[in-house]
Image (spheres, rainbow, N blue to C red):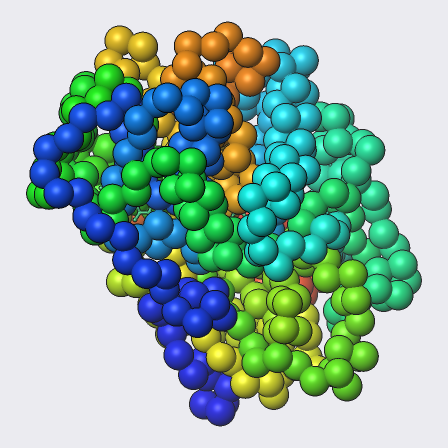
Length: 464
Ligand SMILES: Cc1cc2nc3c(=O)[nH]c(=O)nc-3n(C[C@H](O)[C@H](O)[C@H](O)COP(=O)(O)OP(=O)(O)OC[C@H]3O[C@@H](n4cnc5c(N)ncnc54)[C@H](O)[C@@H]3O)c2cc1C
C-alpha cells in the first residue's frame, strides 16, 4: 500500500455528499415549544419513511421531525447503497415472537420493500442512481464455499427459493472477474442506489406533504408525551424514536443497541480498459463470504466503493466525528480492494468515510409502539437497514393509526430483547468477536475445507 493511493479526503459525513456537490440547504431549527400529533426523533430513512406513510394515510396529522444535525446525516446518507430486501439477522430467532409461517411472511414483506421503494422513488421523482440488479456474494476459499452452501439452503428454507441461485466459478467469471473466486450466491430483485440522493429526495417529498423537519435540534430527554430539546419542547401524544446507531447517546438507552462502525472507501472513476478486465456490466452489488465480510458497488460514475467493518466498536459507545475513519480501517479496506480488484490497485482513492449502525443484543431488528406511553421505536437493523427501514416506516404508520394489519402481526413487532452488558464487557466482547473473525479469515485463506472454529467462537462471544 503506497501513500499515492491513500484517500485524498476522509470524513465530512460521506463521499455521497461530495458526489452531489455538498450538503443540502439547512432547514430551520425548532424555535420554541410546540405541539404536534406525532413527533419523530431522527431524520434518516426510518423517520422519513414513517412520516411519509403517515402523511399519505392521514394528511390531517401534524408531524414534526426533530433532527440533531441535518436530514440524512446518519447511516442513511453514508451507507453502501445495497437495497436488498434482506433483514437482520437470523430467521430462527424471530420464532420466539412468531412461528414459521409468520417468519416467512416477514421474509416476503422484507423482499417486497425493494419494489415499494423503487415505486415511491419513481412516483416522487427521486433520482437516486437506482439500478435494479442482483446481489453476488462470492466464495474465494473452500471454507467460504461451505458457508455459501449453508446460506443458500438456509435462505431457501425460509422462503427465498425463487430469488436465490448458486453460480459456478465459470458462470461468475463470465460476469465479474474476482481472482480466486470459486462461485457465488446470487440473490435476485435487489437494487444499487446512491444513499444520500435517496434520503435527500425523501426529505423533500415528506416536506412537500406538509411535515416539518427541524434540523440542528437535538433531543436530550424523551418522556411520554414530551421530547425536550435545547431549542424547545415538543408535546405530542405519539413520539417515535428513529435514531438507530445514535440511540445509545439518548439518556436511558445506553445499553439498548450497540453502535457498530462500518466504513467505506471509493476509487476515482475507472477508465474503460480497467472495466473491460473486471466486467461487472450488470452493476450487481457484490460482497463475499469472509467472516469479516465486505460490500461493494460500482457507482454511477464507474468508481468502485468498498465497505467493511475495520474498527468495529469504540469503548463507551463513542461515535465517529462526521465520518472520519481510523488509519487501520482504511488500510483494511484498501487490502480488500486490492485483493478482489487487483487491476484497480493503482487507482486513486478519492474518499474514505464511516458511520454507525445499531446492533441489538440478539442481532434482530424490532419495531413497536407502547400504547401506554405513546412512545414507539424502530431499528436495530444491523447492516441491512436501507430496505428494512421502509418496512419499519409502514409498520410504525399502522401502529400509530391503531390499525391491526398484516404488517403489525409480523414477528419483529413489539419484540423486546435484553440489554448489552456494561463496559468494558461490551467492548471486550465485540472487539474479541472481530479479532476472531479476522483470525478465522486468515486461517481459512490458507486452505482447509471447514470454516474455522474461531469464527464460531466469535459468534458465540456476542450471541450473534
Ligand atoms: C457505512 C455504512 C454502510 C451501510 N451499508 C448498508 C447497505 O449497503 N445496505 C443496507 O441495507 N444497510 C446499510 N447500512 C445500514 C443502513 O444505512 C441503516 O440501517 C439505515 O440507514 C438506518 O436508517 P435510520 O433512519 O434508522 O438511521 P440513521 O440514518 O442513522 O438516522 C438517525 C438520525 O437520527 C439523528 N439523531 C440521533 N440522535 C438524535 C437526537 N438525540 N435528537 C435528534 N436527532 C437525533 C441522527 O443525526 C440521524 O440523522 C450501512 C450503515 C453504515 C454506517
